Length: 151
Figure 1: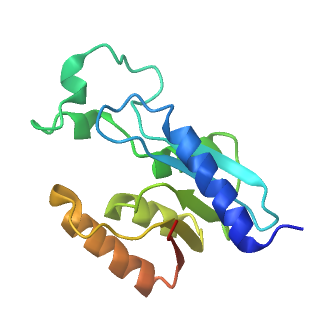
Figure 2: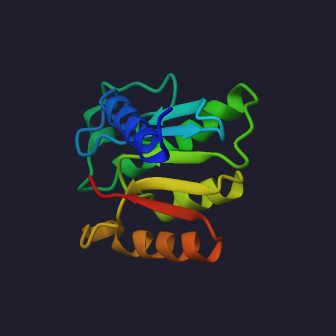
């Protein structure tokens, strides 16, 4: 039987694989939400909402900020995918191949997930530094178990 570190490595690898489905030109982020018995509850990757055209170059423009109006993050897409089919997420673990922003951390907390497995907070990430700092505080205050991936 696999130990927890083996399961963590498997699900992080799956998050990385799922991230490659993203059409985002800057970051490919994947998320896998898993229940207590290691069953996959939902997956997601960063991208445009369902049915929204991806052939408009302006929607990918990070410099102007336009991209941030159009793209959804992997963590919230996984949560929305679970909600669409009525899958409960309370007590689940989310595996992400990037540290979550404040918006995604709030969503993770509000759905009742109690563990995050992902890389450690980046030392410097420019525009998202404040968001990552807020995430770190929320994770601590909400008593979410954080298991950094050190691979």
